[in-house]
Image (cartoon, rainbow over all chains, first blue to last red; front, side, top):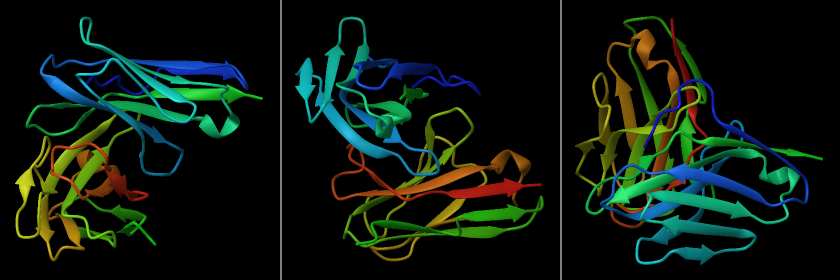
Length: 111
Length: 114
């Protein structure tokens, strides 16, 4: 994963709009990817995962897209709500190795 | 169902002091982990325990030791704290193998080393 230092990228969206959070992963051997949500003062919480043999997976209001050609992962949140405000981390697992977290993106939802 | 419980939630230490962060999970998970999170950054793995009786180094193990006391408990010890160890520490657990993704995290322990 990449470290982005002290300043997280921030995405600001209007309540009710769709959100797209992007992540570039580093290891072409990674075969499993996860998105986590971290609310202020709490530990990360699993949202959704996807294996490298898939390019799309849907959950409740969330969709993860995987583009292995350009090593890109995205999380789409439909009808964004104030409760979606958090920092979102992508994580990758190269086969046989440990989970590695990316640097995170802060999502701010405007009422 | 408490999930993953960490203590203490906050701690201030002076350089050179020692302390132990405690973690317990009540989900009967096999694997447990300790991560640190620095401001604006992702989590970095310090140590993990794939199963009771085993521990392994992660990405940033220097300055730390761990003990898998039993299946429920996994502690992290700082023998001689340094300002570089100021961070938020998260314990996590999972039922599956050590290299799979659905981790359950505690709420974190915020440590400041002066």
